[in-house]
Length: 198
Image (tube, rainbow, N blue to C red; front, side, top):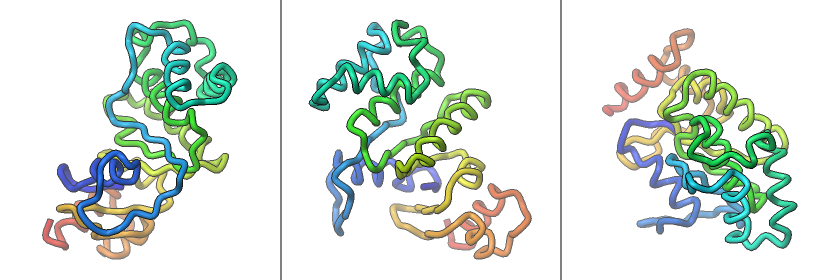
């Protein structure tokens, strides 16, 4: 999901996650959804494993310890399990944040600006992890301001502007719609918005 600031990206993800009611229309979402907000919702004074245990219990996991062990393996955070969250890098904090979103083994994972405030190396490692999740069958829906991430990683784009969906298709289809095939994808996106009066 891409679009200018204030387009409604976070609002849409919040509605899909069931956190915010829709003003109109209907949402047909799967029962099992994981939600990862832009700002990590973590307790800095707790360790990685303590954060995961807390949220696993809140998720009413039948076996919190096994669930946490699985998340530590999945996120490659086993070596950091005893580290206080406040001492982690931004990339590792975001991986803990995503692990919390995955505790309930959701069919769909919603990510709001997952790579915001990460340096290029952290961003690359985070996307390797997200792509691995997608490859193992989790549907990943993410909002991003990094237009190149949309071009590089998305199979399908939804472009929002002023609270409305103005495009739904692949990155190449967006380029074709604007006649900008072969240009930088960010230029194609800006041209698309310009052509539609946004």
